Every structure is written in C-alpha cells, then in structure tokens.
Image 1 (cartoon, rainbow, N blue to C red):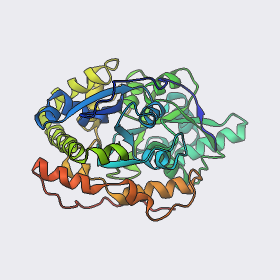
Image 2 (image 1 turned 30 degrees about the vertical axis):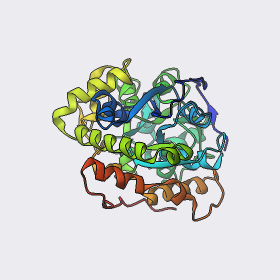
Image 3 (image 1 turned 180 degrees about the horizontal axis):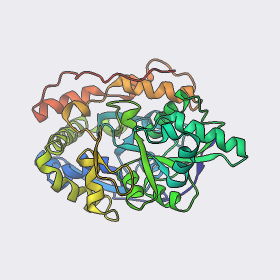
Image 4 (image 1 turned 90 degrees about the vertical axis):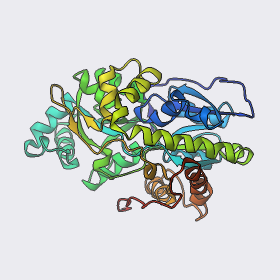
Length: 381
C-alpha cells in the first residue's frame, strides 16, 4: 500500500557544522527520548569526555534525511528504521548501525470518542475490556461496511515503524486486513491529537506523551499499549552512520555508556520528578508537565476523567538497552510480511545490529557485558 502523509513538519536543513570531535545526534519530541536528554542535561556525556550535540527534529522522515545528508551523525530511531534506511526503501540508502536500545514500550493505541461510541454500539460486551481486543474494532468495521460508511482512518508515525507493524500484527490477529478494511496514514507524533480533533483520523498509534495528550484534551481513549501486543518489545534505538562508527568507535561506545548510566538514573523512582522536568523542558514544553510525567512513572490515564492506571510502561534499565539482533530480525520479517521489503540475505541484520559496541559501553559503565535474556518475539504469522 502507499502511505498518505497527513501532515508534514520539518524539511531537511543544515544543522550544526560538522566537527570531528562532536557527535551530532537527533531526536523527536517524545518521552522516550529521555535517555539522550537526561545524559545531556546531567552532564553524563561531558563527564565521560565525549561531546554530544543534540538537535530536536520535527518528524521521523526529517531525521532520516538529516542523517542521510550528513547533517547528523545518528540519533534516536524507530526500531525498523535502520533496516529501511540501509536498504534505501524510503530515501537515500544510508548504512546505519544500531548500537543500543533507548527504551522498551511507550506507545499507545488511542481511539477517538466517536469511534469508541461505534465500538460500544457494535460490540458492547467487548468495548469495556482493557486492553481493548481487536475483535471490538473488527465489529465496528463490519457495522460501517454494512451501512456504507467510509473506511476508518488510523495514523501511525512512520511507514517503517514499530507502531505500524505492531498495529498491523494486532489487527491481523483479529482478521482485520489493514490493506483493505481500513486506511493507514502517516502523521508526525506531535500532530496526531490535532488530526484526531479535526476528524481526519479515527485513531492512532503513537509514542507518549501524545496518546495521553489526546485523553487530556478529551479527544479519545487509550484502548491498549503496544506492550499488550508484544511484552518487553524494543521501541527506540540509537542508530549511528556506519562511516561515523568506523571513524570513532571509542567515542560512540563512550556515548552509549553515558546512555546506560542515564537509563539507570531514569529507573530510580526518586528521579521521576527531575526526569519529567527535563523531558518537558527539552522535548514537549507544549504538553502539561503532569501529562508528560505519566509515562515516566509507568502510568496512563486511559479515558477522560479517570484516575491514572499502572501499565507495562517505559523501561530504561541496563538490560533494556541491549540491542538484540533477534529483534531486528523480527522487524525484518514484518516488513517482508507486508511487502515493504523483499527477501534479504542472512547477513542483513548482523551488518546493522552491533551488540559488540554495547558490550564495550557496558564495561565502561561498570555493568556486566554479558548478553541479557532476549524478550521473546511474537509469532511471525
């Protein structure tokens, strides 16, 4: 299928001038950029002797293009993005290396109030369940088809994203064909609530705080999180251009060591307030601080007027930062499943995922360099 871009944000433009001793990393306005933001704000990069320049970018396509054009050395990326970039299926072919996972979990599937009313009418026994089963959405789709109404429109944040593939996996398990039974569009994360408010989409899958913002504004309800689809799934990764990695492997492993340290700090509940202030100030100042803080506390308000609920939320602990090649292989199978890439050689994932860099960083950070247990992947079907 062809993804329609419902909103466009930043076009590529020159950023900071290149300097061989500076790592120029980009990030998008999301709560799970926290390890980069905290490492910078607390001086963890500086204390380890590495200079990192962070640049906030408005959309995933813009971040991809900044890296491809040499304006950035790397940055926060959606887990499947390095595969697409390496193969050049969504722009310039850009060989990247995944040197760490930045976070697990952190996304919500949020449905507009009008759609929730349709689900309640079509499947009242399912509508109140949490997490919301995809069969409830299937009932609403059948009811729409029977009345001749237009297809539902859902947004994901990028064509080659965990959001897209996990949403598709959830839908397909209930017999929903995302290519035929609904329309998927791409909307940059900060714009999803606006698109929902304007009626251009019926729901979305996006990272926090954007699901919580939609609930806060009374626009929709969080039906489930992507942790309900794949428990302990990798979400964002730190990807570096392979040429840059060859030039400065020690500097990059030191950068990862600072990120591991930031993850340890983020995992301490005593630091929740300061972490919230850092993320709010540097990434999402237009979202209320209390809303930003929900995901960092591993809580969500699922519907307007409800109290916060504990969820399988963001994970930043050291084991969560390990870049498992098995996870890269799972994303590749989903990209193949939906016709986004062709069959690839067995060398594809080992050429992109670099746990050896993480192991060097772990030693520098004073933690065990041994491979942590790999969270099981969902069935490939």
